[in-house]
Length: 203
Image 1 (cartoon, rainbow, N blue to C red):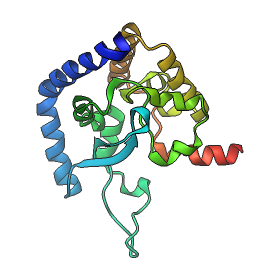
Image 2: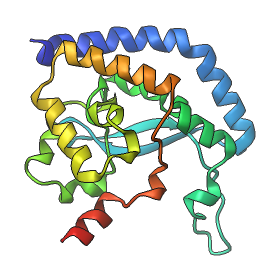
Image 3: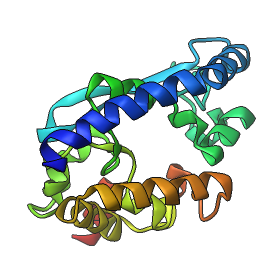
Image 4: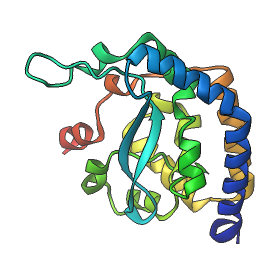
């Protein structure tokens, strides 16, 4: 009953309340980001949701849109701004995803939505992660965030789905808050192999 009905209802109510309470912070971050990036402070990217239905996930932009002489975007580490680094470490860049939760694209807790081009690389067991709505935070994120390897991270996603319950969601939200207050083991995505590279190298 929780998985089929109450989880979505709780998500909607909690996300609406959080959005209203955090709106001043969201507006301040958006204004500062607008000045720093001199462009749209928001970043959107297609991600697979429940049943692999693709949606646009929103975040605060942490990198500039600077390009080289050929019009190609510069490497991530060059485009990452000081503000963007702070937003990532404090998880403030994730705040716009409250809109995704309100819309029903995401849940507060669930497997993190990864890039769409990773879809062909999941094993049948790992694909179980797409039987529920993806989350702003999840079991893999509170178990080491980006420091956790791909195989372990995807297994944790499956374990979350298999043991989904209200109690576990509350515990994960609590642990997430602690992670935000006391950031640790945070490694930027460009410092680890992508899933495609990992699977290619492994095979």
